[in-house]
Image (cartoon, rainbow, N blue to C red):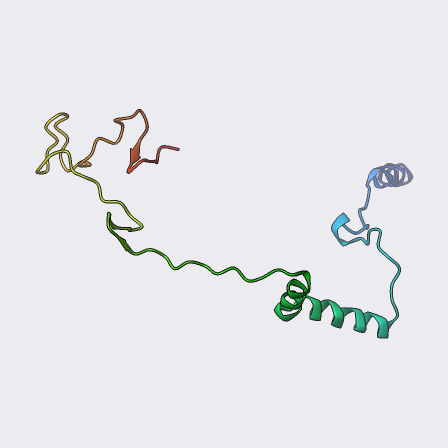
Length: 125
C-alpha cells in the first residue's frame, strides 16, 4: 500500500510545472554588440555632452536657425482687459431663479444650449 501512495504522489508531482525563467521584461533582447569598457565610457560621455543645451544651440546656429522673438502678452487694450476667467452675467437678481424657482442655483441657465456649459465651456462629460 505504501508503494502505491508513492506512485500516486510521484505522478502528481510530474504534472506540476515550476516557473523558474525570468519575466520577459528582465530578459535581454536584440542589441548591438557590447563595447569594451573604455569605448563605453567615451560613448556615454559623448551622449551626455550631446544632450546639453549648449550642444543643441550650437547645432541650431550651424543650421542657420535663429531664436524667435516672443511678443509680450497683451494685458490691456482699447476694448478692455484680457483675463483668464470670463465673468458670467447674471440673468436674475437675488437667490431664487424666477423661471425655475431654484434657490441658490447658478445665475445663468447652464443647459440653455443643450449642454451643461458656463462661458461657452461644456462641463457635462
